[in-house]
Amino acid sequence: MNISVLQTSSSKQVIYWENLTDYMKIWAKNFNIKNRPIFEELLKSSTNISQSCSQSVFSTFDAIEKLESWSIELINSWGNFPPAGNYSLKQNFYFKSKFCVIF
Image 1 (cartoon, rainbow, N blue to C red):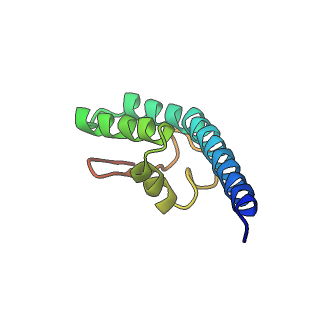
Image 2 (cartoon, one colour):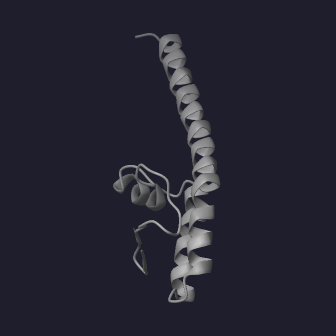
C-alpha cells in the first residue's frame, strides 16, 4: 500500500473520530438537560438524602458532560435512562450509585 493511501485512510479515521466526539458531546449535553432536573427535583423534595449523596449525583452529571469514561460506563450499564415512561415524584423512581440510593 502506498503512503498516500495510508494518509487518506488515516485522515478519514481522524474525521470519523472527530465526528463521533462531537456527537458524544451533544449527546452528553442533551442527557444532562433532560435528566439533571429530575434529580434536582428529587433531591430537593427528599429529606433523607445526605450531602455526599447529592454531591455524588451531581458529580456524575458533571462527569457525563465531560465525557469521563467511568460516567459513560455507568450510564451505559443501565441500558436506557430513565426507563421508558414519564416520571414524577408521585411515581416510583430508583437510582443507585456508589454513595446513595434514591427511590
